[in-house]
Length: 347
Image (tube, rainbow, N blue to C red; front, side, top):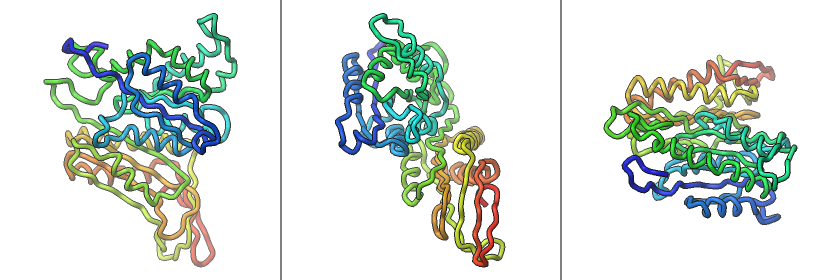
């Protein structure tokens, strides 16, 4: 890759996340992560981390941690490749975890990997019809490309070989190096040098989960924090012990399968609107709980970082209000008199 000023750009940075219950618990040693790391190292990439985690929620947590800014880490990598969790089993939720952190999808990448596996162009490689069952996706989060690959060693190696020319070109675009003469960086939320600053809006996380949220606010606050933002405003919604004059004993939340997608759309709209109205950078994150909750449990948490406190306060307030109005989540309230009722959205 070449830099716009004719100099030598930094080597592209890549992280690998392996989703495997058995490898994460030491039942066997993971092999796909080292294969991916070696593939990138041979081509001059800087491999910043290979992380092995259990299937499910830990995949999303690993992706969110890699994408979040942190001191001494050099920022998010240019590329994150995942291995595993893309099939049809109930625990294969890597595509869903990935989608929850993306700003936009790049479907052609996953389609290319599947197509080349089903019908290889290299006569030395055998066709893998079962590749049609892979649900892997690819997309962009900030300036980072995230790509799902299968969990097998062969699937990882073949997938990377298929994308050998695509990945460097994607990183160039996301870094803004592909169109050096343009007035703004291609695929970036950052303005080009010398151009007027544009409002930036980023949704770091938007999720609906069935697990307790006791420690989630701290995670979201850390995830949205950025040196460009001077304020972080947060919201925590607890289950109260009364509603409309009646005593409440418990709540049960249920959600539509598309609830997380709608929540992300709401968060993106609110963050973008706030950024455009104030000119501030805005970074937002929100998570809603489902399942059985008792009085005092946390039902929803949200955090917004912005350049100034006014924008942060306004954005987190609007986010919670519009979540309540639009996201398909319903709650059943149980009362002290033994009765219950269903209520649309948060309440």
